[in-house]
Length: 302
Image 1 (cartoon, rainbow, N blue to C red):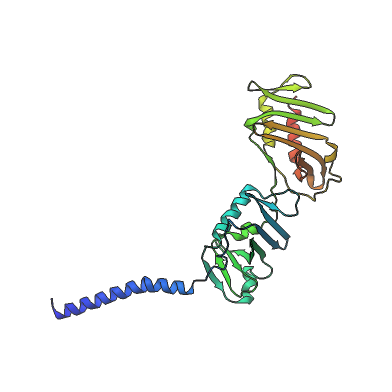
Image 2: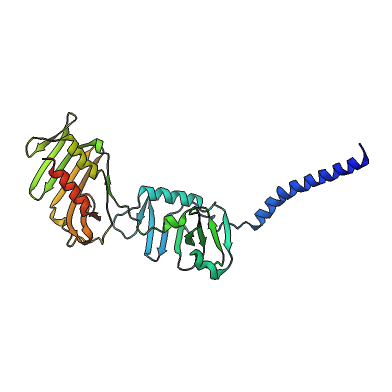
Protein backbone atom coordinates (compact mmCIF):
# COMPACT_ATOMS: atom_id res chain seq x y z
CA UNK A 1 0.00 0.00 0.00
CA UNK A 2 1.37 3.38 -1.00
CA UNK A 3 2.26 6.09 1.49
CA UNK A 4 -0.48 8.28 -0.01
CA UNK A 5 -3.12 5.63 0.60
CA UNK A 6 -1.92 5.13 4.16
CA UNK A 7 -2.28 8.87 4.82
CA UNK A 8 -5.74 8.96 3.29
CA UNK A 9 -6.76 5.89 5.32
CA UNK A 10 -5.53 7.53 8.50
CA UNK A 11 -7.47 10.70 7.76
CA UNK A 12 -10.62 8.63 7.13
CA UNK A 13 -10.22 6.84 10.46
CA UNK A 14 -9.79 10.18 12.26
CA UNK A 15 -12.91 11.57 10.58
CA UNK A 16 -14.96 8.51 11.50
CA UNK A 17 -13.77 8.70 15.12
CA UNK A 18 -14.53 12.43 15.28
CA UNK A 19 -18.00 11.87 13.80
CA UNK A 20 -18.75 9.17 16.40
CA UNK A 21 -17.60 11.34 19.28
CA UNK A 22 -19.52 14.38 17.98
CA UNK A 23 -22.81 12.56 17.28
CA UNK A 24 -22.59 10.18 20.22
CA UNK A 25 -20.92 10.87 23.60
CA UNK A 26 -20.29 14.60 22.98
CA UNK A 27 -23.81 15.21 21.69
CA UNK A 28 -25.28 13.37 24.68
CA UNK A 29 -23.06 15.28 27.08
CA UNK A 30 -24.07 18.57 25.49
CA UNK A 31 -27.76 17.70 25.65
CA UNK A 32 -27.46 16.64 29.27
CA UNK A 33 -25.54 19.76 30.17
CA UNK A 34 -28.49 22.03 29.19
CA UNK A 35 -31.35 19.73 30.16
CA UNK A 36 -33.46 21.23 32.91
CA UNK A 37 -33.81 19.33 36.13
CA UNK A 38 -37.48 18.46 36.72
CA UNK A 39 -38.41 20.49 39.80
CA UNK A 40 -41.30 18.07 40.44
CA UNK A 41 -39.03 15.03 40.64
CA UNK A 42 -39.67 14.64 44.38
CA UNK A 43 -43.35 13.76 43.81
CA UNK A 44 -44.15 10.17 44.76
CA UNK A 45 -47.61 9.18 43.55
CA UNK A 46 -48.05 6.66 46.36
CA UNK A 47 -47.33 9.30 49.03
CA UNK A 48 -49.52 12.15 47.76
CA UNK A 49 -52.46 12.67 50.12
CA UNK A 50 -53.72 16.12 49.19
CA UNK A 51 -54.01 18.26 46.06
CA UNK A 52 -55.04 21.91 46.10
CA UNK A 53 -56.15 23.54 42.84
CA UNK A 54 -56.75 27.29 42.66
CA UNK A 55 -58.05 28.99 39.52
CA UNK A 56 -60.30 31.86 38.51
CA UNK A 57 -63.25 29.61 39.35
CA UNK A 58 -62.18 29.21 42.98
CA UNK A 59 -60.30 26.70 45.10
CA UNK A 60 -60.75 22.92 45.18
CA UNK A 61 -59.05 20.66 47.71
CA UNK A 62 -58.84 16.93 47.05
CA UNK A 63 -58.01 14.59 49.91
CA UNK A 64 -57.03 10.95 49.51
CA UNK A 65 -59.51 8.52 51.04
CA UNK A 66 -58.27 5.00 50.42
CA UNK A 67 -58.24 4.55 46.66
CA UNK A 68 -60.61 7.48 46.16
CA UNK A 69 -60.23 11.26 46.12
CA UNK A 70 -62.74 13.15 48.26
CA UNK A 71 -63.66 16.73 47.41
CA UNK A 72 -63.11 18.66 50.64
CA UNK A 73 -66.00 20.72 51.97
CA UNK A 74 -68.50 19.22 49.54
CA UNK A 75 -70.58 16.87 51.68
CA UNK A 76 -69.76 13.34 50.57
CA UNK A 77 -68.70 14.00 46.98
CA UNK A 78 -65.77 12.19 45.37
CA UNK A 79 -64.10 12.50 42.00
CA UNK A 80 -65.12 9.96 39.37
CA UNK A 81 -63.09 6.81 38.75
CA UNK A 82 -62.07 8.22 35.38
CA UNK A 83 -60.70 11.38 37.03
CA UNK A 84 -59.04 9.37 39.81
CA UNK A 85 -57.27 7.23 37.20
CA UNK A 86 -56.16 10.36 35.33
CA UNK A 87 -54.77 11.83 38.57
CA UNK A 88 -52.91 8.61 39.30
CA UNK A 89 -51.30 8.66 35.85
CA UNK A 90 -50.31 12.33 36.09
CA UNK A 91 -48.84 11.93 39.58
CA UNK A 92 -46.81 8.93 38.41
CA UNK A 93 -45.37 10.72 35.39
CA UNK A 94 -45.12 14.43 36.23
CA UNK A 95 -41.85 14.02 38.15
CA UNK A 96 -40.08 11.92 35.51
CA UNK A 97 -41.08 13.63 32.28
CA UNK A 98 -38.33 15.84 30.82
CA UNK A 99 -38.80 19.61 30.90
CA UNK A 100 -37.98 21.85 27.95
CA UNK A 101 -37.31 25.54 28.52
CA UNK A 102 -39.50 27.58 26.17
CA UNK A 103 -38.84 31.00 27.69
CA UNK A 104 -36.51 32.55 30.25
CA UNK A 105 -38.31 35.90 30.36
CA UNK A 106 -40.68 36.62 33.22
CA UNK A 107 -42.52 39.24 31.19
CA UNK A 108 -43.50 36.56 28.66
CA UNK A 109 -45.05 34.18 31.20
CA UNK A 110 -48.53 35.59 30.65
CA UNK A 111 -48.47 34.46 27.02
CA UNK A 112 -47.96 30.88 28.25
CA UNK A 113 -50.45 31.20 31.10
CA UNK A 114 -47.74 30.55 33.68
CA UNK A 115 -47.96 33.86 35.54
CA UNK A 116 -50.09 34.44 38.62
CA UNK A 117 -53.23 34.15 36.47
CA UNK A 118 -52.49 30.50 35.77
CA UNK A 119 -53.84 27.48 37.63
CA UNK A 120 -52.03 27.11 40.95
CA UNK A 121 -51.52 23.48 41.99
CA UNK A 122 -50.16 22.31 45.33
CA UNK A 123 -49.31 18.63 45.68
CA UNK A 124 -48.83 17.51 49.27
CA UNK A 125 -47.01 14.51 50.66
CA UNK A 126 -46.33 13.95 54.37
CA UNK A 127 -44.12 16.86 55.41
CA UNK A 128 -43.81 18.50 51.99
CA UNK A 129 -45.86 20.49 49.49
CA UNK A 130 -44.74 21.20 45.93
CA UNK A 131 -46.39 24.21 44.29
CA UNK A 132 -46.40 24.98 40.58
CA UNK A 133 -48.36 26.85 37.93
CA UNK A 134 -50.22 25.07 35.15
CA UNK A 135 -50.52 27.22 32.06
CA UNK A 136 -51.88 26.68 28.56
CA UNK A 137 -51.62 23.57 26.43
CA UNK A 138 -48.77 23.40 23.95
CA UNK A 139 -49.87 23.85 20.30
CA UNK A 140 -50.14 20.08 19.79
CA UNK A 141 -52.40 19.82 22.90
CA UNK A 142 -50.27 16.89 24.10
CA UNK A 143 -48.20 18.93 26.52
CA UNK A 144 -48.61 21.85 28.91
CA UNK A 145 -46.61 24.92 29.87
CA UNK A 146 -45.64 25.00 33.55
CA UNK A 147 -43.61 27.14 35.92
CA UNK A 148 -43.56 28.35 39.52
CA UNK A 149 -44.35 31.80 40.85
CA UNK A 150 -40.74 32.40 41.87
CA UNK A 151 -39.22 31.35 38.53
CA UNK A 152 -38.65 33.48 35.45
CA UNK A 153 -38.53 30.44 33.18
CA UNK A 154 -41.46 28.66 31.56
CA UNK A 155 -41.15 25.01 30.62
CA UNK A 156 -43.14 22.57 28.54
CA UNK A 157 -43.90 19.06 29.75
CA UNK A 158 -45.38 16.23 27.72
CA UNK A 159 -48.54 15.81 29.80
CA UNK A 160 -52.01 17.33 29.47
CA UNK A 161 -51.99 19.01 32.88
CA UNK A 162 -54.18 21.86 31.59
CA UNK A 163 -56.93 19.43 30.62
CA UNK A 164 -56.87 17.72 34.02
CA UNK A 165 -56.42 20.64 36.41
CA UNK A 166 -58.41 23.11 34.32
CA UNK A 167 -61.77 21.44 34.94
CA UNK A 168 -64.43 23.50 36.68
CA UNK A 169 -66.28 20.59 38.33
CA UNK A 170 -64.37 17.96 40.29
CA UNK A 171 -67.35 16.27 41.93
CA UNK A 172 -68.56 13.08 40.27
CA UNK A 173 -71.86 13.73 38.46
CA UNK A 174 -72.81 10.05 38.57
CA UNK A 175 -75.93 9.63 40.68
CA UNK A 176 -75.70 5.88 40.46
CA UNK A 177 -74.61 3.17 38.06
CA UNK A 178 -75.63 -0.47 37.81
CA UNK A 179 -76.01 -3.26 35.26
CA UNK A 180 -79.65 -3.35 34.20
CA UNK A 181 -79.27 -7.02 33.25
CA UNK A 182 -78.76 -7.78 36.96
CA UNK A 183 -81.82 -5.86 38.15
CA UNK A 184 -84.43 -8.03 39.88
CA UNK A 185 -86.98 -5.63 41.37
CA UNK A 186 -88.21 -2.09 40.77
CA UNK A 187 -90.45 -0.17 43.18
CA UNK A 188 -92.30 2.96 42.06
CA UNK A 189 -93.81 5.47 44.48
CA UNK A 190 -95.80 8.56 43.48
CA UNK A 191 -97.26 10.16 46.58
CA UNK A 192 -99.67 7.55 47.95
CA UNK A 193 -99.47 5.40 44.80
CA UNK A 194 -97.09 2.43 44.87
CA UNK A 195 -96.46 -0.48 42.57
CA UNK A 196 -93.73 -3.09 42.24
CA UNK A 197 -92.36 -4.99 39.27
CA UNK A 198 -90.19 -8.06 39.85
CA UNK A 199 -88.29 -10.58 37.79
CA UNK A 200 -89.61 -14.04 38.62
CA UNK A 201 -88.51 -17.17 36.78
CA UNK A 202 -86.57 -14.91 34.42
CA UNK A 203 -89.72 -12.98 33.49
CA UNK A 204 -90.78 -9.48 34.53
CA UNK A 205 -94.22 -9.07 36.07
CA UNK A 206 -96.11 -6.71 38.35
CA UNK A 207 -96.44 -8.04 41.90
CA UNK A 208 -97.86 -5.12 43.95
CA UNK A 209 -100.45 -3.91 44.79
CA UNK A 210 -101.70 -6.85 42.74
CA UNK A 211 -100.36 -8.99 39.93
CA UNK A 212 -100.33 -7.50 36.43
CA UNK A 213 -98.53 -8.20 33.18
CA UNK A 214 -95.56 -6.12 32.10
CA UNK A 215 -93.81 -5.78 28.77
CA UNK A 216 -90.17 -6.77 29.23
CA UNK A 217 -89.19 -4.29 26.53
CA UNK A 218 -90.83 -1.44 28.45
CA UNK A 219 -89.30 -2.22 31.86
CA UNK A 220 -85.88 -2.57 30.20
CA UNK A 221 -86.44 0.88 28.70
CA UNK A 222 -87.05 2.30 32.20
CA UNK A 223 -83.92 0.60 33.52
CA UNK A 224 -81.97 1.94 30.54
CA UNK A 225 -82.65 5.51 31.69
CA UNK A 226 -81.60 4.71 35.25
CA UNK A 227 -78.59 2.40 34.93
CA UNK A 228 -75.98 5.13 34.31
CA UNK A 229 -77.79 8.20 35.60
CA UNK A 230 -75.73 11.39 35.40
CA UNK A 231 -76.61 14.74 36.89
CA UNK A 232 -76.59 17.82 34.70
CA UNK A 233 -74.95 19.81 37.51
CA UNK A 234 -74.60 19.95 41.28
CA UNK A 235 -76.49 22.74 43.07
CA UNK A 236 -76.01 24.43 46.43
CA UNK A 237 -76.47 21.67 48.99
CA UNK A 238 -79.62 22.95 50.70
CA UNK A 239 -82.84 20.91 50.93
CA UNK A 240 -85.01 24.01 51.29
CA UNK A 241 -87.46 24.39 48.39
CA UNK A 242 -86.18 21.29 46.57
CA UNK A 243 -89.35 19.22 47.00
CA UNK A 244 -87.19 16.24 47.98
CA UNK A 245 -88.45 16.22 51.56
CA UNK A 246 -92.00 15.32 50.43
CA UNK A 247 -90.94 11.96 48.90
CA UNK A 248 -93.36 12.64 46.03
CA UNK A 249 -91.48 10.51 43.51
CA UNK A 250 -89.28 7.53 44.40
CA UNK A 251 -87.88 4.75 42.24
CA UNK A 252 -85.96 1.91 43.86
CA UNK A 253 -84.03 -0.64 41.82
CA UNK A 254 -82.53 -3.70 43.52
CA UNK A 255 -80.55 -6.56 42.08
CA UNK A 256 -77.38 -8.59 42.38
CA UNK A 257 -75.05 -6.49 44.53
CA UNK A 258 -76.94 -3.20 44.47
CA UNK A 259 -79.90 -1.39 45.98
CA UNK A 260 -80.35 2.06 44.43
CA UNK A 261 -83.10 4.54 45.26
CA UNK A 262 -83.73 7.68 43.22
CA UNK A 263 -85.77 10.53 44.68
CA UNK A 264 -86.95 13.30 42.34
CA UNK A 265 -88.13 16.68 43.62
CA UNK A 266 -89.28 19.96 42.11
CA UNK A 267 -88.16 21.44 38.83
CA UNK A 268 -86.72 24.95 38.68
CA UNK A 269 -85.59 27.42 36.05
CA UNK A 270 -83.35 26.26 33.19
CA UNK A 271 -85.47 23.08 33.03
CA UNK A 272 -83.56 21.40 35.85
CA UNK A 273 -85.05 19.21 38.59
CA UNK A 274 -83.71 18.25 42.02
CA UNK A 275 -82.76 14.62 42.63
CA UNK A 276 -80.86 12.54 45.19
CA UNK A 277 -80.03 9.00 46.13
CA UNK A 278 -81.94 7.44 48.97
CA UNK A 279 -78.76 6.52 50.84
CA UNK A 280 -77.05 9.91 50.56
CA UNK A 281 -77.69 13.56 51.38
CA UNK A 282 -75.95 14.72 48.21
CA UNK A 283 -78.28 16.81 46.03
CA UNK A 284 -78.08 16.77 42.23
CA UNK A 285 -79.88 18.43 39.35
CA UNK A 286 -81.14 16.35 36.43
CA UNK A 287 -82.71 17.82 33.33
CA UNK A 288 -86.48 18.06 32.98
CA UNK A 289 -85.99 16.10 29.76
CA UNK A 290 -84.49 13.22 31.77
CA UNK A 291 -87.38 13.35 34.24
CA UNK A 292 -90.04 13.53 31.53
CA UNK A 293 -88.48 10.70 29.50
CA UNK A 294 -88.38 8.51 32.61
CA UNK A 295 -91.97 9.27 33.59
CA UNK A 296 -93.24 8.62 30.06
CA UNK A 297 -91.64 5.19 30.10
CA UNK A 298 -93.09 4.49 33.56
CA UNK A 299 -96.60 5.48 32.44
CA UNK A 300 -96.25 3.11 29.48
CA UNK A 301 -95.63 0.21 31.87
CA UNK A 302 -99.26 -0.11 32.90
